[in-house]
Structures are given as structure tokens and as C-alpha cells.
Length: 463
Image (tube, rainbow, N blue to C red; front, top):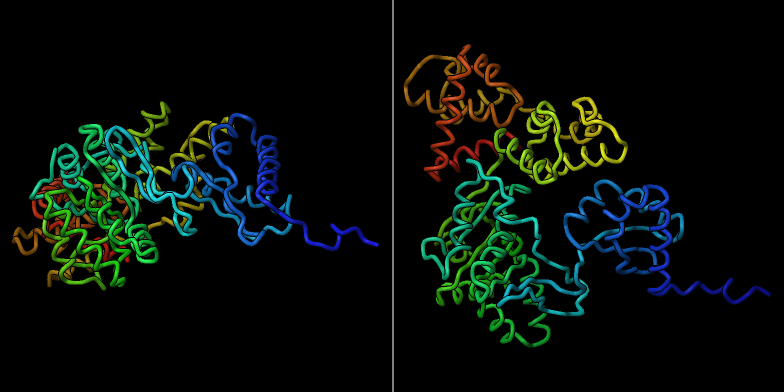
């Protein structure tokens, strides 16, 4: 007769999965060595098993989670499957402290609220790397930076910047600035209560309050803060009940002369499926965009990161990364981290050739399809010009300004050098191109409408 454990499924409790992760950890030490294990894998722990075959691991920060996912996720998945053939999927979440979903910075302490048992709750924590000191400022983000610092420095709400609305594409620095405001505001005045969370978690908290018939506690908690920060407000688009509560929370904060800071992936006027009265209020204060990085800003970001890491690499590698990884800051920093980690692990010098080899797949996905000719056609069509006007020497404002915009976009959206760009605009000197780029950057910094026009053209060309 078969033993009972041969015919009954094995019971797998938390201890089983903790031991399973220990087995995988021993394999990782054997494969990568103790130094690498201590630096990265030791921070990962077993969190939850869903249905006995979906394994959830936890990391203490978004940075570690993303790094592990980008570089070691496949080997972790294979090792888990090796030790337990029933494992079907693996995921890593950020879970510094269990079952928390918002961060409150209150007098002299960081405290976590909503110690709930709702399974969909996830941790939202302030990243210690995201401070003003670590934010590299340039023309694409200088208004957003200055406004954020001003709000963080102020002892009370600033009327002209309330709400402060930060918007821009993925990975350009919005969340960095949100975290920096929270850190700096608490350091400046520990008695100032700051609450930061995502719009998604705002909705979950609201739903939970409704379900528990505790809506008054919800209202009191949110309306008792000095600075309320809501990240990715686009998430509430189309969610009517959440919009209604956000509307009332917003009004209460503003009416009490408290500060609102909001981030989004687009400007208030471009939000769809959101009430007009909310759109109007979102634009009451200061709307500051964080738009695509320039080549010079990417160079600055790389050099700043290398200085903090105390790593030296050649200028041609830095130039290469700044020219090729242009989609967002997050991807740029990830590429640099990968190159440095590879060099450290295999003991190989960082050269242009090794960098190209290590980032081969990433570079393939980032290869530009936009040409200067594409920009000529789009700008000419936008401003009712002839394509040939791009190469003319006309100084008419109706031609010269669009031509300068085209030169600026050629520099930001293509890998062409200044000399190459000048050649495409009627064999103009590289100094003419430099002047055009500087002029457009100055206009974008001083004129929000013009900045939005150029950013719109950039998005159209990249879509």
C-alpha cells in the first residue's frame, strides 16, 4: 500500500516556501559568489504563494526590484522551477514593510498608515535616492525643479503654485521630484505633515472606507495634512466615484490653505474621461512639464551618477550612451548600471565595443526611425511651408522660427551631429544650428504655450 504522502498532495505552508527560497539563495551564492549575493540577492525574500504555484518575492525598494528583474529574473525563475516543478510564475514586488500603502511624513518621523489586510494593497515608499541633490537640472526640467523646490521650502501653501501640477512622459523625473519635495519639506520643517501616495492607492483607500462604512475617518485623515501629494492622477480618469471624492478632498485642502502637489503623464487639458470641474481645478496653480531630455542633460545625468558611484569611464562611452539611450532617464541609468555591473562581475574594462555588446538588445529596441527629412516634412506641414523652405536662407519669421524648431528637434530626436544637421538645412554652419537650438530652449523656458507646441511636435514625430 502506498504511503499517505504519496497519494495525498503535499501541504505547502509558509515555511515550505521560505525554505524553498533558501535553497535558491544557496544556488545563487554558488553561481555568483558571496559579494554579489550580499549586494543584491540577500535583499530579496519570499513574500507569498498564490494557489501554491505563483510565487511572489519581495524587495525593499523599487530600485532593487527593477535591477533584479532586469538582470537576474530569468535565473531566479529557473532555479525556483528546478526546486519545485509546480511553480508556474514568479513576480517581485516592493514590500519594505508589510501591508502598507501610503507614506506619511509627520513630526520627526516616517510612519506608515493603513496596516490593512486588503490583498491588493501594495507598498508605496519614498526612495532615499530621490532628493533634490540627486536631481540633474537642465532646460527640459528647470521650471518643474524650481517650482518643486519652492513648494518644499515654503512654510505654508503658495497660492500661485497651489496646486503644483507636474506632468511629462514615463521616466523623466516626475516621481523623483515628488519624493524630493516630501523629503525636503520634512527636513525643513519636521512639524509639517506630508502625505504621499499614488492615485491608485487613493482609490483603494476610498473603496475600503466605503466598504467598512468609515468614510468620515477617510475624509478626516486626508484633510488633516499640510501637503497632500498624489502621483499619476490619470489613474482616476473614468472612475466617477473616486473623482467625486478627490474633488471634495482637493477643495478642502485648498480652502484650508494647505498645499496640493499632483503628477500626471499629460497636462490637465489633455486628460480624458475626467470631469471638467476637476480639470479646471488642476490648472488653478502652476502647471510645469518635465519634457524629454536633451543630449546635454543626458550627459549631465551620466556624469553625476558616475561621480556618486566613484566610477570612471571614457568620454566616448558617455557620449555613446547619451546619444543612443534617449527615451527616458530611467532607461539611461539602467543601461549605465548594466554596463558597470558587467564590468565588475567579469573584470572587463568598459570600452565602446563592450558597451555596444552588453547593450545590444536595448540598443536594437531604441534604434531611431526618425530622420531629419521626416522632421522637415512634419514641420513644413504644420506651419504651411514648403519643405524647400527648410533649406532656404529666408529670414522671414514665418519661415525662420519653424526652421529653428526643426533644427532643435533634429538634435533631440536624431543622433546627427550639429554639422550633419546644418548640412541638411541648406549647408548651414554648425554654429547656426547651435544658435537655433539655444533660441528654442530659451523660448520653451519662458513661454509655456510655445513649450507645449514643441513638445507636441516631438510626441507626434515619435508616435
